[in-house]
Length: 225
Image (cartoon, rainbow, N blue to C red; front, side, top):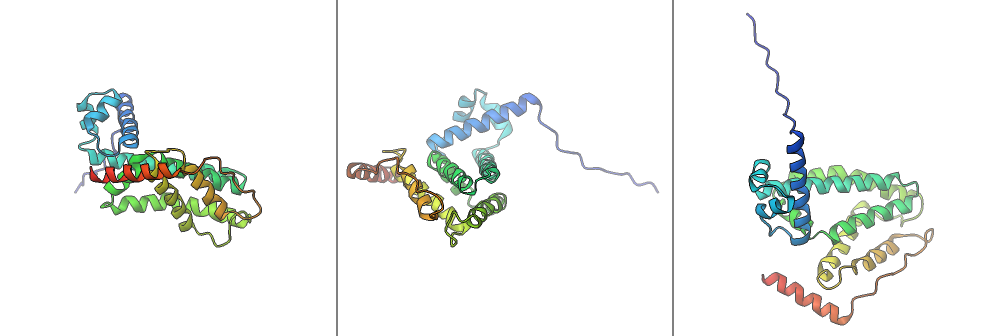
């Protein structure tokens, strides 16, 4: 008896114009999420991307699908930044390069934290984030520790915590002072370095008492909305 042989059909590649449209849609969504958080619509994305609303819905059935795609792009950005940092021949400068990149990404991207929260019910994506980024960051820390430029007790989890601490001050002060997070990034780096590398200068002034009160008021207003 002859048995028919079946083979799986490979996924069809997007046509060049469809691929370009998808990239424009994702980039538009990233920009809008960064500026406005997740309070945007697919119509807003279509307008920013310069495509019809129907084109957006053909590629993404709903906003959650688009959020997931943007998350994947963020993961790639972090992974690429970590790889770039590892390619820096100077262990300390490589660590600083990645730390600055991660802090800036979170400080200037309002939507990333909201994207993370929106996808919290999808643990597989967070496993992907960990698996793609954690080994490279561990290598960055290990290399710096072996070179004697960071405190011997610094762990990879400490590094993540410091990034999120800087992100927290950026979120608090952002509506009033969008640059002050850089001051606290310098504090963090000075706190983990050894005497083998010089202290980083504090180039950004602290928040004034008036700015602190304004930031508090802005935070309260945001929570009431």
